[in-house]
Length: 168
Image: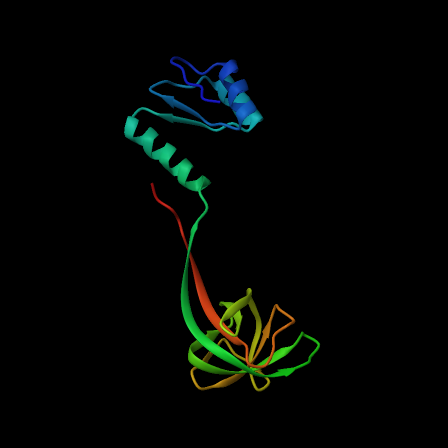
């Protein structure tokens, strides 16, 4: 529903806003205390401004907040699964880092014969029995992933996902 009007904010305006989960912009007017209290009770936000650019900026920010963030991927490294070790935590993938690095907090993509079969998380990263935060190229490590069907020969692409706030 698109509703706009001139003058003070009324109870009818609050009913429209409550019914459509909308916000109210009050430009160049003061909102009476009774209306502010009713709006607060109904969970309606009223944005007041005496300067048009402030109202426009506020509307722009509210619209941006409704948008999904833009996800940008950056490849950090690649590891090859050389052996699978069953454990209580799930299968541990014995890996060799082929390029870049493996970071414990990064995302991963499991590929088999060039085809992606899983996008997920690293649950644990170890060198021998020691928990580590990072393993570099040409090093061997144990990686526990959130996917139970990893096979010898699979590749684990290590990815950093950056969430970017959209702009208008």
